[in-house]
Image 1 (cartoon, rainbow, N blue to C red):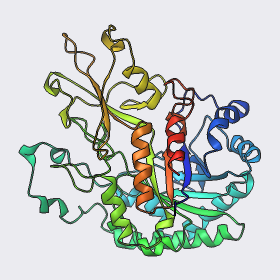
Image 2 (image 1 turned 60 degrees about the vertical axis):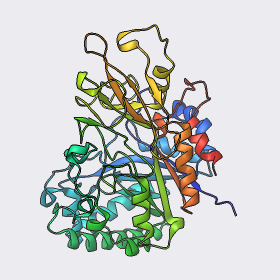
Image 3 (image 1 turned 45 degrees about the vertical axis):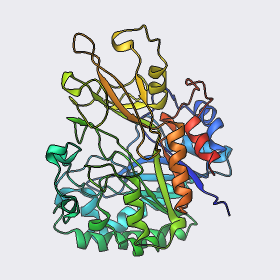
Length: 413
């Protein structure tokens, strides 16, 4: 029997070409929302003084999404909280998301403010993309054989990044339970997104969590980024492990971990990116582009993404099909596909004779997104989520129509 997957997409603050006034927003979304069950709008944060919900999107207003809800009655719109967009202190004791967990009064203040926003703007619920402390990057273990340790060493105990992680684990379940009780009284949903580099072992009591959420989205990507590992470019979201890499840095490891801790597979959603992570290539990067390669940090921002080290799918595909006679920054990328469908696609442009304009990108395209949707179906997961709608090909610049990644995922339903 074919699984019917939920298709959700994430809209956050990457967008530049989507000038989201009310009319523009609904017009740009028209080709996309027919494929989706959920729109998760990000992001809101937590006020460090009051513990109340605050907006992190100063260019948009929630009432725009009210208009979308009214136009598309089948669509459930959830407000996401956190999502690595909220500025927090690195030390767990100073992290507002941890401090909130520790105090019942603060949790109640937060929950009351969440319910007020849900009521005021007619959201269908909230998504907790909780900003737990991150696992530290381990750059020297990012693929070079000279640094390779015995395989068993990969599975050493998680580093101590929060001495109170067991307490926070219990308190997070309490927050979910209390939030669920509050929002269920008004018929609203509670979902959760597990952000990259958050240790489920340290912070998440999976069996208990699954009792209090409608579904959990695994953001199974950005395992390697130019921010965390600036000197080594590598696949950012492989489905399966690669040799000589951290064996946890792949989709299959994350999914398997969750399936070993819950039987509620229908509540698990696989997150798929619609963008690429880009590094600067240098003379030391070599000429083949075969990862991992030495790099010199994050590449320049694209005209759409406006984020260093990040390119949207249309920014990448346009460069791949660029005129081969062009030079410098206008020179085309060379695409390298993965016939095994296990690791992903990358593209690169080697440095020129002056040692300039080198770039390497690990990215998602319609075919690789389809492979991941296939994986989700084979593992009997509840659905997939696209991160995010704004970095798919909104205008149809790649010649495959509008939202080709989203449509390809839907076609795998």
